[in-house]
Image (cartoon, rainbow, N blue to C red):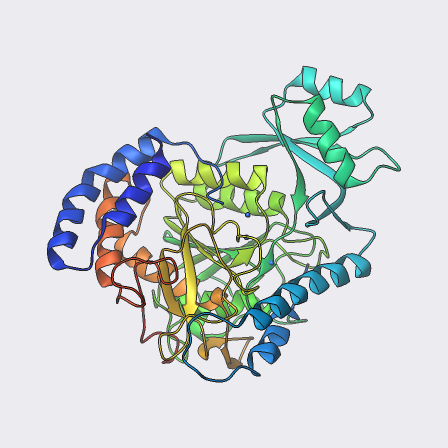
Amino acid sequence: MTFYRFFHILLNFSGKTMGARVTMRIWTTGLVAICLAIGGAGPRAAAQVALPSAQLPEAGRVLSTLPDTGVLEPLVETSERLTQLRLDRIGALVRSHRDSIELDDRGEPAVRGVLIATGVDDAMIGHAAKAGFALIERERIEGLDLDLARFAVPEGRRLARARKQLAKLLPAAAVDADNLYFASGPGGALPRSALATTAGGGKASLGLIDGGIAAHPSLAGRVEQRGFARGAPTASRHGTAVASLLVGSGAITGAAAGQRLLAADVYGTDPAGGNASAIARALGWLAQSRVAVTTISLVGPDNKLLSAAVRRAQQRGMLIVAAVGNDGPAAPPAYPASYRGVFAVTGVDAKGRVLPEAGRALHVDFAAPGDAVLAATGTAGTDRLRGTSFAAPLVAGRLALRYPAPSVDRIGPAVTGLVMEARDLGHKGRDKVYGHGLICGACGGR
């Protein structure tokens, strides 16, 4: 039985009665230790340059036309409109940056003219070169012990066709495009904004992969940042908001208020930022830094490099919390939220109803406030924000308080405690809409 089968038996085993929870506590203490020792990962099901900011305002305008009926499922028409907004957004992004972005064979945006592969050796590289796929570089991602090769697509050939050809040439390797991932909430760079910094030493239990973080007073002296894209770190509205909901104290109080945070900016000023390579490198840095819980409020497609990076980070004891996105339930399943073992988080409004625009993953583990959430948005500003991006850090912060350092024997009790903390929503017990229920319901300035 794989790590993931064990892990989700653990999560599904929880009932909502005290007896079931006590039983789960007995299971989880030893069970997750076995899970991490066994290892093995892949997609659970399909997850947003710098940080396109159009998606949520547009979705918000669509949703503002809905009557307040209390119905949990969005109208079919609204779901279709959200799907079209997603397609329009991707189309506009590609048209605006044809020199750096193109679509892969699934219609997903990726870095133009580049293919990435793991599990390759010198003979494979030579074989690919004879077929016109020149090696750009080989790279080792420290912290994950993950080697990859980056190939140039032959001139005049489209990425969609080239990916299939190289995968056929190298059947023993994992070949994919360098797909892009987008913020599941309003974003945008903050030009000329000072960056949040850290003071003194000490380890951080929390990690964040997003845009850069501005020097808001609620984050003063507790954020260490590193860039994994051209021009990074560069302060962003989205990254700042998520960070404040994780560790903010004062005007903005995060779910793990006052904790230190390691933040990886995977966007910077690069139109093709937020790619799988950047996220994999960021995970390597966080794993090497012994981060226990990492928040990724970004969504995009299944990707072989990202899957491998997530799997290796998990095998090192890292717990990953991810948002399900805001493209509606008709959108493709969100990654990395859909990967096995990742905690997938949806958002709810003040009445405990799932956001109509909430995307989907192959599983949902928890819900948290995702509407009118008070967060930092710059060096001095705050705002009420909406989106599953802002629910994910609330779950991650609460989890980190129970799981302060990577340690196999602590995972079971930490997960058990979080499940016991959840307030049941929707159908009795765990369900597909809310998972185990609501975490941190009074957070986010509620």
